[in-house]
Amino acid sequence: MITGAHAVLYSTDPEADRAFLRDVLGLAGVDAGGGFLIFGLPPAEVAVHPAETSGLQELYLICDDVEAFVADVRGRGIACGPIEEQRWGRITRVTLPGGGGLGVYEARHARPVAAATKGRRARKAPARRAAKAKTTVKTKRAPKRGARGGAKKKARRR
Image (cartoon, rainbow, N blue to C red; front, side, top):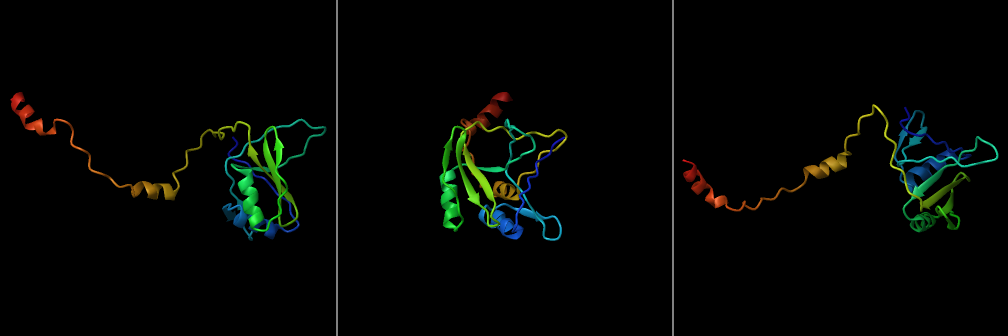
């Protein structure tokens, strides 16, 4: 069964584009060997569009606020195209250091729930959530109504 998706960006300057994914977009990565980094992505979705020929794939990243995204990357000196209004969302194209482009858009369409995979156990909560839960301060509960009357109830039972 499908457990994820793997997207590939081809680049004439892979080191610069990897640094962009890590340092600008803040994606965590793992070294798959020999310095070859693979970056984790948030939940993904896939759509099939009509075309004259099959075999073309595109990658777009989704953000909550495309204007904030554009301001952030431009503030870091990274070229970003104008925001275009589409019926399905607002899109821009960021220029990667290696010269390629990457579409980034703010979705207007409904977002699907991440696909469940059969036979896979749910992941444990990230350590920071678990640590936060451990630091929760317990407060004393207010006494229940009639708590003082406990002795009277005992006497009645006898």
